[in-house]
Image (cartoon, rainbow over all chains, first blue to last red; front, side, top):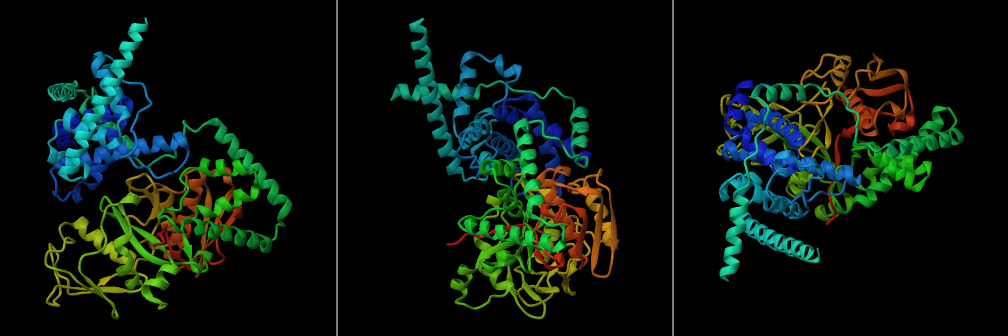
Length: 180
Length: 405
């Protein structure tokens, strides 16, 4: 294992990778395990990194694959079947308890995370990469292996989806409050 | 319109204001955890495995043993009948799989347990056992309806040997009744194999022209990507080995002027490249979607089959998984054309999870075959895997099915 590569990548990208994973899986322990898995894959394949994309987006693309593997395994465990796993079309919902930091968020942000779990996998990835991680359209496209236009379309749909679902959630809350 | 715009803007502000999350571990802690994770895997118990599945697996085992006791004599002749029956089961399954391209491995033992419990019949269990085989042999009943094409897929700069089974009806249609060569099969079907769907990197079809001769003649364009780094070179040559090694002993690689190609950091390739891969140890490795495949990583050649089998229990590197558990004791005897493995204790289904059992037996077969030897297993439950009489008739590992059109 090349520890000099590890040190450099850790110093430059570790917290970004961790944040990406914890927002996707919403579980600190799982995010820590997946971060380690990202490093293992990175260190194993570092020599073959061809520099077609930036190092940062290459790392995020590996982190994305690691996260999808996690959700795929979770899906298999839940259903005990090996049906094809279309991560873009299905929801990438973590069934675990949220870490304290996320539980302590204000009501609106918690609602956002809940609603994000109801979006499809491609929408969730785009929101996390574009807004939580502040990646550009191009960087997001590189990390997900998409075209720029696909990122833009998915982002637009994701925002519309979030808006719709959050509005509905608010209406339900108001109706609930009125009944009380 | 304004409200709509404001709502969008407000939502975008909200999603942009999520707090930063920090990993609270120190760098040293993370590095220590990585080193720990990268150690050779110890077969993990699955804490998530529901107890009911374990009970179900035992139930199936009891049913299966009862069935065997009532139907099987202890003679080898009867055992062969059982093996033949299981092979037929594999063929039946293949018929139902023609419409999709899939790795025909069962990854978790509980799946087969579930399936068998659902039917409640021991025979279903025996059929299930044949379905999760991934090796292809000369006399495989599958080859009555499929043609095997040697192939290779790569993941993270490592080439995995693959055997693609192509429906005969497609070949008859595409080649108008003619029997195509392996190179023709490759040229015809490589482009439609969806490597990414199977969890591999998109690599095929190969760049350049490939022609048949005494050796494989490869003409590469000046901007070919295969000599960019040592890793890309290794993957390319290993791919040539996997795809064309069964047909050609060597490949001659030239540039577009028919001159020995100038290979970056190596110089002109004046000598043909050997495509023969022998005396290897087949371990297992996972791809991007966590499926396990047999792979002779690092393609190191071993002096004896015993040494190679030792690698299956204690691999030299941490990238592959050990396929023989360290707790399993056995002796190895080698003759001119066979390698015999005698387990110290009777090898039964409860010794290993089903997936690991299949991987172990298949890696032993593939390793022995790479030494041009048959594998003879002794002191084992022969119903665990439908081994043919001559395992050296192995055509390929890691079978996948190409879809019908």
